[in-house]
Length: 201
Image (spheres, rainbow, N blue to C red):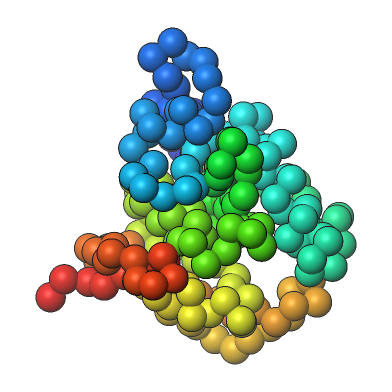
């Protein structure tokens, strides 16, 4: 309970730090104040609570998980969202094209990017924003349930597989973890825009 309360206080602080000078504006504009916009890239990343970003996150998640991957809606919306920090990627015209979330216990999940925005580095920028947020929140270790076909993407960002594969929502997954006590270096994106993570010697 204390861990969740501490994360909630930190989350509230993150939301206030992302406000524009006038306290208003779209999430995409607020992204600039947070320093999460990659210059020259199509997608901009906004971080915030469910009350501010939930509607846009649901639009992306429903398209990817429910319609594309046939995950039952009652499993996709699990009741945890109100306690999470959310990241939403906004493309041209402020349209939400990707999302992910960070739970109070350091679990990253609900990583999703719309088909038209894939291969442009959007997923990598969402993941990096959540990892950086988790480190600032004091997590020494971040974990996620990666779909097996996406394992290479997470390995490129420093996550290591642990244990045996398992089924979740009818899709094969594996547990992957990131050691946040080691200094991370986000390398420049390659041809697919995703980049990779290394640790200085």
